[in-house]
Length: 87
Image (cartoon, rainbow, N blue to C red):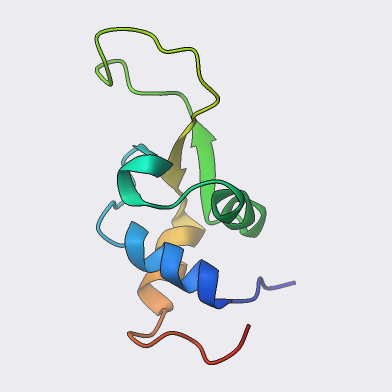
């Protein structure tokens, strides 16, 4: 089954457009929480380990690093400039 492109998912994909396939933290791009989990369920992003050069110290947090998948890059390339009028 194909995932549905809702407005929140569209907004998130537009924010991820410039990221490419490099690891990112949700706070860096303004996409976080349930939206990232929703994109993960679609198969458009996946959780990854933080890059070694991310910070010179360790922070105990629930924050995760993510990476846009091939399916996510395809979805980003397929979306329209204008947001969907549904959901």
